Image (cartoon, rainbow, N blue to C red):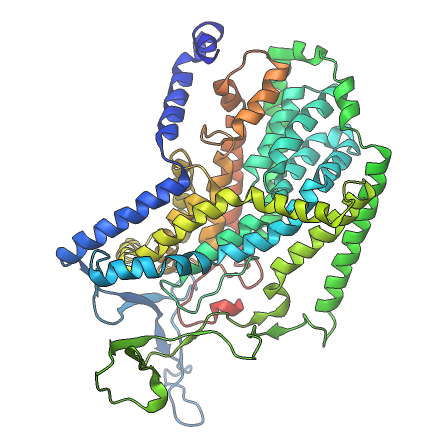
Length: 616
């Protein structure tokens, strides 16, 4: 049918549709993300062997704040009470702290994975690589509650209720805003909101395809925005932190790293898509396809309306959610409460996890170190290096350290209430099965994470990650490009990357280990890089043929216009992609100039030697 459409029904767009078909064909030739990361891991193995044989090396450098002597009005050096000359960061004419690169340690050489030790390490570390992925517990725990709420229909009822109670004039921004926040329910927004929005628009005398387009723009184009932390935020957090620690072993990224920016982004996406829908898309649809308003959607609307028991259950579930939020606030705000102030996570025995650099030698080796520095003697002699250890879990505000368990509870409890009142929850097995539903949804992500974890750790073992970061970072530093330009360029890189690799998480797994360390060396924080990534990944979701949900949206589209193909859908959505890309990128650049944090403990700048993990 698609070929017939291209040749007869819309000949004027044959060339553009041919290009789109070529992109789709090329994208479909790429392997599945899990296979792709397996191949990338294999590539790292081979490169490590080649690099080792060719004696590749890179001189490590580290960014350092340029200091200058403080002087009085007469030019005399200032000293403290002990006579020490006072130093302060040197600033340029614009008032920015100056940073320079200095050599740090011996040159890095490639460590081959195709040696006896390398092969042993690959097999012995396979399970640990997967189990220690920061994203694994974050997304797993969050989806227990989110999946249950989705399974029992809490999210569906909430979306329908909000959409039906919205005035006609505010229908567009309401639909877009709902879509921009639907990512909290995984990918449920793709399935629920577009057909609902199309039916609602038709019911109030507006073009149904405009409703479909507005909903899709919110769900896909605003995927990286929203008022709530999501499971995807947890995965991005883990990747960003691992990448940042290539440069700064003590750097910590929290799950709320872009929270303030996400909230404002949801508003920006809503305003941008509102303008495109009401001023560009719908007038064109009414001019060219006004006859599509003649369809009768009474039956569909009645099916989507909330039934009496669903309405009562939704009100009760929302009331419970407010109570849960209130309890959480009561645990945070008053002084002396469990989640007030700063805290440090500990093990059950009161100890903390520390990573310590060690030397490993045969057991018979003699070493001249203190006895307490010998960690093990059988079967190898393992001693501590002089390098200080670092905490695995960095201290911070108590409430931010429990955000993932909070996400679990804030959706689990209302979801149970809704399921009970709609008689979907009749036994404990129903509750357990609903939690299984959330985990089933992330099984593909878990498979990807397994192979991604091997790729990331192979990259680190071979030293190629740090070598690439130091080399690229030095080039960027020497180029002296302004950070706003780097933000724009990275957004463009992500947009083009989405036409080669679909999936927010898998693509970030490839880009984060390369770009985050490089950008840190020129003063961009990992949180700022992640914010730019959200923009590029989101705005192209609505036009890339690699988005598997395009087929679902296309099915709804075909309900109102028989015979349309993928090219027509992409042409419909291109204005959204362009406008949202410009507005959202402009927002981040403007945000950069304000100097405001992107979220709690999420600065814009990376200043070496400063307490970036505390949000300074």
